[in-house]
Length: 367
Image (tube, rainbow, N blue to C red; front, side, top):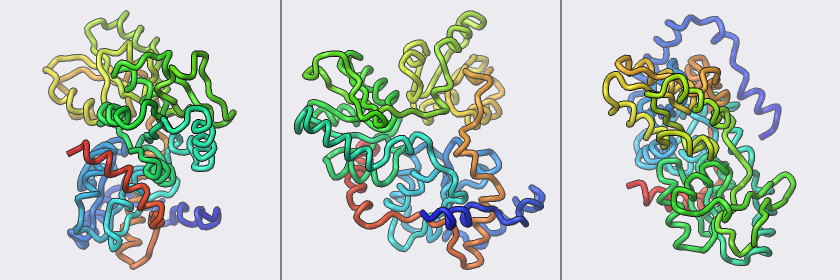
C-alpha cells in the first residue's frame, strides 16, 4: 500500500479523541441497531474489553475463520483482529460482502516474518536440496500471499486448534514438511506426534541458510525461523518459579511458546482450549496462564472462584491486537453509515483462488 494512503487510513480524526467513553459506546450501539443484520463484528479473544463487548461473535483464528466462511448475510464485516485475519475473512466471504479493519496498523509481527519473496527463494533452495518430497504448511497467522503459495504447492493452512491433525495429514502427502512462519508451533506439534528434535531443521530466511547438523536424509520437518513476540515472553524459569513458590498451581500455555516452556508446563493448547480448560476447572483451582494478557485478564474477571495469574506478570498485551480501540471501532462504523469506504481489506482474485485451496484443506478438519 502507498505509505501516504496508509497514513491517511490510519490517522484517527481529532473528533474521536475528545469523545467520552459513554458517548462512543452509545454511538456504537445505535449504529449496530441501525444496520441490524447488515453489520457483523467478529472479535478475536485478544481484543480489548472495550471492543470485545460489541462483538457479535468471539473466537480464536479457527473459530472466526469458520464463522466468516458460514456468514452469507452480512453486507459489512468489521473485523476486530489483525490484518491477516481480515484477509482470511475477505477470501472466505462472498464478493458482495465488504470486510473492514478498524485500524490498518493492526498487523502481526509473526506474519511479517515470512514474505512471499523469501518463501519463493526458500522453496527453490529446498527443492534442490530435497527434491519433490516436501509439503508446505502455513500457520493461519500469515499473509494472503503465503497462504496462496501453500495452496499452489499442495499444502494447507494450520491453526493452533487443528495443528496436530494438519501435520498428520501433511505426512500422508509427502515425507517432509515445511512449517511457516512460527517455528515453535511447528516444533511442538511435530514433537507431540513423535518426530524427534534431531529430525527437525530450521530455515533462516534472513541468512538464507538451513540450520541443521545431522544427515540431510533424516530431516522430516523444516521450521521457518519465525515466532510470536508475545509468547516468546514466557520462559522456563517462570515455570520454575511457580513450582518453587506455589507447587499446587497448574501451568497452561499456548503452543506458540518455546519447546522448553511447553515441556515444563502441565498442559498446552489453543486459545479456545485454554478458555475451555479454565471454564471447566474446579472452584478453588489455581492457574498460571501463558498467553496474551488481555485474554488472561478477562479470564481472571470471568472466573473469580479460581486463582488465576499470568505466567509472566510483567507481560504486556499484544501491541498490534491492541491497536484496535473503541475510537477506531466507532470511526469504522460511522464511515460505513456515512457511505464512505474506509479501511477495506481486499485480496485479489488470483491470490484468493490459491489461498482457498489451503484454507479449505484446513477447514475440512474443523467440522
